[in-house]
Length: 467
Image (cartoon, rainbow, N blue to C red; front, top):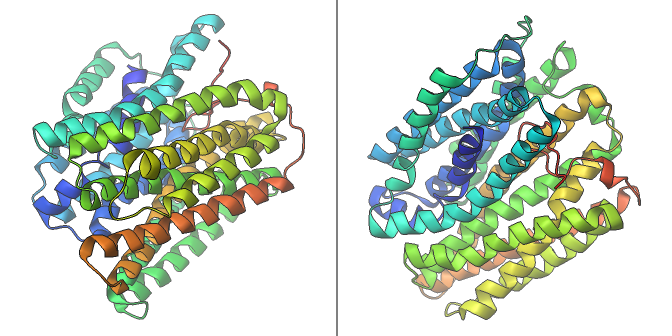
């Protein structure tokens, strides 16, 4: 049950990517609205993860799990039935809220129901593996459903398993008592989520409306006010989402910068690659999904390689090596032509870049949780995962604005103009990941990785990775 929940959450972050061009054609979406179909999900997922984990401790994980399953399922149904872009984006935002509740609750239910340490480790390893499998399966399934049935089925596909999860949760999950406390930093979670959302919206509107327009200035000012209010609340809160002592840790600050950059790279690569293959090269949705399949396989392989070598070489070495590989891969993508050869212009650079990013993930988690007090370990790794989701959403908003601005001023045909925008976006990604690799130099040279978590999940609670 928990594995199915995680599978749905991760699947939904990738399955819509291949369907974006069909969504745009069917609902007459703007470039900004296309971006928000991805960003809306990531912003609410990242913004409410820490809150959902805390809510499970206070009110019981079964309640939070069922809430997430119902919201996610209903939102998927509404999104599949959407007749305009606004409804679809609202449904994706609601999906992200449901996903934020499902993820930590599903993990906590595993740890509570498996009292034997060996059985718990096997269950946790299977739970962690579901994330990689779902990401791999999402791009392929998205292509099949979009090409053979309709883009709407990339959302409808969540409904049957969502109903099954809800029914099974009601029937089989034992109610767990909460801690008895009632303090929950809901204002903090709402402020940071709305602040990031306003910032993303303002940035996404800049290319079309201009930086001095009301549609850009008002959201950016609102974002600054909301985020300032969030910081003020966190300083005064007895139960802040982010414990203040964590912010003082230099290794955690650097690790969050790195994870933010990883989130930007992963999300933007999938987004722009899907658009490039379909809108420039002319691939169908199904062929696009199959073309992206080897790239997602590389992420799984890279994770396995990182698990073997991070304890030996140390996280700083792995971050430098991964960052440089990712820099080379994304810089290679910045040379894409209007008429591309799949192997040399798409497959190879994405495999190089994807492998580099994948071997960074474990090392970032190890670095970020090193030196953290045990009672703050969950919050630290949860903060890392939040940085990844918010990085994907905010980075995508900035990159779409840059690409759209370049495209609008480029000469030549439509396809050529699109390619010019994508090239600049990939070049910016390359610079971002390169600067992150340099930031890794400030980390300690040797962290006992073998003592750290090798696969911290989205709610921030460590997952054992012993075979």
